[in-house]
Length: 433
Image 1: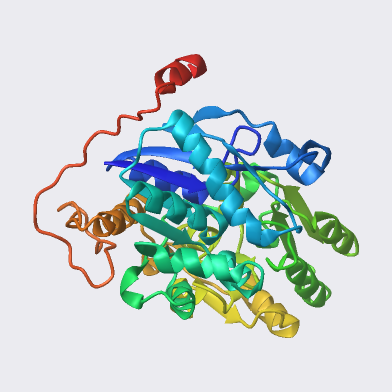
Image 2: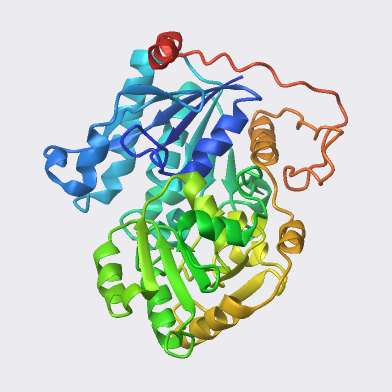
């Protein structure tokens, strides 16, 4: 089976750390089928003159990422001018790319509801193949509230063969937009269990040059107001005088980075901003912390929460999106209302000192790996084609993620090899050796 994945949230050579969850899930999915990725890049006249767009415009047209053949087609984008046109323009750009370079796929997957999912549905209807749309959080919680975008977003979701949501709450959000529940499947993201596992906190702190005597709260994510980065600093400022041995570290970058730095300056060396870091260094900071703090205003199911729990670290987060599905027990952490700084400050204060067993946290969380997440995603794709789901390997002890309401098949099955059928793939691999 050949699958075409279309998404603007995917890494490229100029931004290798973007959307690691899509990179890992799609790479694991390639065990089951042939996958080609259109990791799109927005373009408009003069885009290179704007710092927000200039980096991505320098990305190569083609590359191999984690074994996947990836194209980076540009699509005409009109930021803040006519958002209702972005979906049709995106679809037209992808059709042009498909006709020029790519044989017809058996299924088209759009990862993000708009414009990616809208374009995937348009192309799938032109080709007469199923379309699957994966939704992440802000595409449903935020974009659906924009009058200029909502009609096209709803149209794409309602005409998709199936919709994949990363949390139960997000599934209900999709249903509220007119999609029947029996066409929506919950497939949670996975976690790299080799990288994110319980480690010795003291060793991690020593490797980072941090004192073993101090307490450490950690924020990981984009430095954005909606992600709660400024809330984390503001809440920490409330507890800092009473707890002089507690520090706050923020890992990431984003549009509100300067505001975060200005707020952090008031607290001297008690707040550290590391900037964006590679995934292995993020794992080390998670291992070094006493608790993760993620006070988002809206979310899907943030991977950093799953990774923290898999690392045996408790979490303080907001009661939004799929976070309550993951923080299913008080042992795993504490939930507060978004924007409630007094409650957040109290939860951070308690989390900095609460004793717990990291091995128990990791076991209690029940976090699935990327192979299980990819198999569940593949079962959705098979359902879109009217085919039977793939059973979990017999040796797998944890219950298999599966299509909602459909038990795994008992038929024996082995995944076909992924042939990576871009014509240029072999040359690209050779050029990168």
